[in-house]
Structure formats: C-alpha cells, structure tokens
Amino acid sequence: MSATPPPPAPIASRPRYARLQTRRCGAALMVADKSGAAALLALADDAPELMSKASVVLCDAAEHAPALQARGAARLLQTSSTAGLSPAIATLLGDARMGLQVFLAGAEGLIAQVQSQLLSAGVPLGAIQAEHRGTAARRMQCVHCKTVAEDVTVDPYICPGCGRSLYVRDHFSRRVGAFQGVCIDAETPGEVPESVEIRI
Amino acid sequence: MQTLKLTRKEPLSPRITRFRFEHPEGAPLPVFSGGAHVMVEMQDGPVLRRNAYSLISDPLDCSGYEIAVQREDHGRGGSLFMHRDAQPGMLMQIGPAVNLFSLNLAARKHLLIAGGVGITPFLAQLPELARLGAAYELHYAVRARDELAALPMLPDTTRLHVSGEGSRMDLDAILSAQPLGTHLYVCGSARMIETVLDTAAALGWPGDTLHAEEFLAPAPGEPFEVACARSNRTLTVGPHQSMLEALEAAGIDAPWLCRGGACGQCETDVLSCDGTIDHHDHWLEPEERKRKIMPCVSRFRGRLLTIDR
Image 1 (cartoon, each protein chain N blue to C red):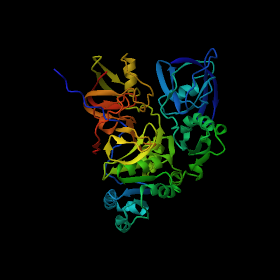
Image 2: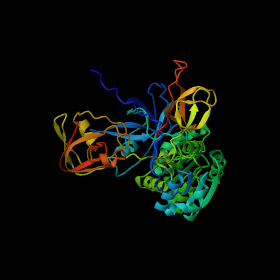
Image 3: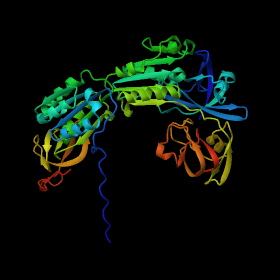
Image 4: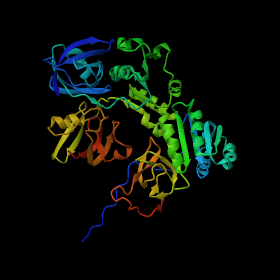
C-alpha cells in the first residue's frame, strides 16, 4: 500500500497579498502600474480622506492619471517604466517621516522592486501593504551569478546573465526584491524539463 | 535563582532607591542586554514575595547588578520591604536576567519615552546605545520635579517634561517628526503607555515599530475558589494573593518568568468557568480570553473556575 506523499510545505518567504485597506497615517505613498491602478481607485473610493495626504506614483499607466487626480491625490508623479520608479520614489521619501503608510498595487515585480527600495530607506515592513493585480510574471534573481531578470513568465527560465536553466522557486528575498532562481540541472547536466508557464 | 549580596543602597529620589547586588565571593555575573529584568525574592516574614525589577547598570559590567525600586505605600508590600528591611550585607535570591524589552538593532533611530520610574529599563540601554553609536532621543516625563531620578546617569540631551511645571510632553509633535526606520519604546504607567501607543497608531506608526513594557502587580480582589483538575485539588485564592502564588503555596507546579502578565510563561488552560475571569494581562489575544488565564495577574469572580493544573 502506498501512502500519498504529504503536500510540500509552503515557503514561508513567499509574499502574500491582500486587498488594500485604508489605515490611519500621517502621509500616504501609493504606487501602481496599469493593472494596479484600479486597486488604488477602489481604495480612494473606500477612503476618500486618504487622498489629500497621498503622493501617487503611476508607472506606465498615464490613462489612469485623470481619475486619480479627480479623487484628490495631493501629488501625482508618472514614470514610463519600472526603471524610472526608483528616482521618483527616492524624491518622495526625501522628506518622509514615521507615520508614512504605503500602498502598492500591480505586478509582483513592481511590488517587489518598490518594497525593496522602501525597506532600504527605513520604511518598516508593517507600514507596507501590497495588492497583486495583473500578470503572474516574477522578478527573479539568479542565485549563482546574481543577475536579476524582470518579467520571468516561464519555469525553468534561462538566466540572461550566465545562461543557466533556473528553477523558479517560491523563496523570496525582501532585501533584493526578487524570487530565487536555482540551477535546475546541476546534478544531471543537460536534463532540463520543458518550460511551463508560471501561474499565480 | 542565585544568591547575591546586597552591597549598596542609596536614594535616587525621595521615592526611588538604587540597590546593588554582587556575587558573595566577588565572582563575575553574566552580562545581559539593556531592558532586561530580574526577579527579586523577598522573604517578608512568613510571606515569600517575588517582584520583577529592570536592571539599570551597564549590561557589560559583570561586577554587579543594580536595580531601582520605587516605594509604593499602597502596593502589595514588595517595594516597602526593599525600602525598609533590605539592608547592605543581606543575601537575597535574584533570578537570571530576562529581557522582554530589548532594543531592535535594525532600527535607524531609537525613540525612548519614559514616564516616572519607567526610566529604569532605559538606564541599561543608554550605555548600549552609546557603544553602538546609534541615533536616539530620550524623553523623560514626570509629574513633579522631585520625581526625577537618576539624573546624573542621563545624557545632557535628555528632554525632561515636568507636567506640574507646564512642560507637558507634546506627543503629536514628537511622533510626527521621527525619521523613517525609527522604533518607539515606552515604559511607564498603564495610562501613559496606552496614550503613547494610541497616538503612535493614530499617526500611522505600524505595530512592528512599537515596544512597551509595564510590569503589572497582581490586583487585589475578593477571594475565590479555583479547582485544579490535573492535581485534583481545590484552592482558595486570598484577597491579596495571586492565583500563581496560591498554586505555589499548594505545591502545584506552574511555570513563570515575569509574574507581571507580559511574558506568557504561566499561560493556563481554563477547563470550565462558571463566572467571570478578570483578565489583567498584556499577553492573551481577545479570542483566547474565554479559554485561557494568566494566573500571575488575573482573577475570577463567580461560582467555580476549573483550570488545567
């Protein structure tokens, strides 16, 4: 008689997301991409009082800017790509104080990248909320050559840095802001399973 | 517990006295970390008292442990024993240092807020902060100037607030001006801690940056009966006795660490409850309060309480 193997234990570092909820705060920072903007709009409708304290950064989501302006965002910055996010957020963090609450919405890669920047600036983890919307693509770090690959959609994937085939793990580094990719054929060189699409 | 010798006793303010304990043979004591406390056992006539006191000496100084005790004229008697009966030369039982209020070393800055005798845990953290070169800000609030204790042990940058002289602490201003990554530590009366934590939460400080310590004395109350299912005994808890003390007096084993409702060690399952539990602890979550009790500080009113001891 063969017993069913127990399901693998979930990886504790795998981020969990939830709907953005209003919180009392001294100031609010909101960041979203095209798919996440709707989450910010829903939050603004739930908690209109939040918007007068809110600095909003939209990443490649210009079409949502008028709606967020209309809801009274105190400040609105726009970037055309995730690469432009970092300087915009650094500007907003310049005069931030404890009491700042952060609301992130959109792709996991955007959430991971921004959260990593916020943590290194001293924003406490407990002040950051994130709602995942849109693509299941991940921001991956190769544990061998440390290259970070954006928008990885298949598992295994080829590391753009060292060319290894990497297994997409649920292990997540908050500091780096990326999931960990590990060589899939280290013990059986050349035996690489066919890539499958990553699902949420 | 270890036997230490009381070597020095000196006033720090009209109501607060410093006590120094050393090893009877001069052996070094273990180092600790700032914010730690020890349990001090006092044989007060027929009554064995155990009170927790924050260590106030430099955590790396192994030559002795120092505590500061505020005299509570209407307390249960421990602080009065220390002030009246404890004398240099006496041997006393002192527990190991336990820290439930340590600095978070990942913080960018430490905001320390002390009310009255709540300055004590910070006195041991100050040398730690100095060694780390960490950014910090110490606020010390009292009602009247003669309550200020240990001023020579405090840095010049300490901000004193004496409410009787109109220099009440402006919490909103202090908590709104802190850089990202600041952790807040508050020690003082229950009311002060609640005010500080509520203000911080209202301003958007997340719970993972807030730290508080208050040692609760077991509240007195009406005597009550408690049935101990595992030991198959029923005890009466006296009006000035805690349930934990009643268990110990009856020889029933119950673990403990802080005896002040903060550490969680003495958490006990409630098997049945025909009446009302008066929870006084800082440990149990609201949803646990129907099926658990902290015998160090909490009491019962009603017909019968049965616990798993």
